[in-house]
Length: 343
Image (cartoon, rainbow, N blue to C red; front, side, top):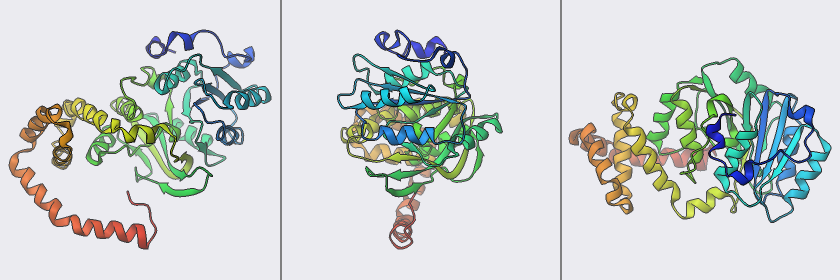
């Protein structure tokens, strides 16, 4: 793996091999590296690991890296590693933190394709790996294969199906970035619902981000490649109170990181040349609503307003106010009457 990832990993974690690994397996190059970074998820790990072992696709390795969990995670992981030679494990001493642990997993991967699977998530279909590998094999322009996902609760009951990217097939990377910016949302999804090309991810995840780490990485990859998407829910993302996303949301880390992303990507020539008035208006409207940013966003607001123009801002503001009651009624009908997920 290129040194760019290794430089993002703490030296204490990068030293040495995975304990107990079979040398013949370690030297092979599987098609897929399933990376399971985990912390304090002993309760969920068996379900995550079993969902991989149950796959009809067999040319993979599983790398499980526990970030110094205080629960019974190590015992669970060692039990599975002893059972299947494709499973390699490592136990960080001391705790590295979420993003450094993701990068350590990347630094140890040998597969052509990377499939992250967090310790509290799982694959939702026995053919998930087969189908995602085929998506990348058949679409060389795609750097990410993405699926819809089941949102599950602590007891693995399906709460809803998330299908935010919409149309099946290849979608242009730059267009997907713009759609994320228009919606102020990660419509691609979490690492557990993505398969990516290992060579494309050589930079590693940006450790300056804590909440939008995955979205920043997707933007980085999609400037040079496309997305191939299926609305079939092949993966499952677990929603629970102790996950890092919920902890970060309480401190509004994500909103400030989004401002950082917006400032960076607004300056991209390819984005500004798109003349996306709708995107510019939504971002300006959002920035003005988030007055807590104060002077941090003032310069960015001024630059974006100059690009959009005061007249266009006034017209789009009027359209938003005029259509909002209809949009709210439609969302209510879809969610509470038809029981459909609202995007």
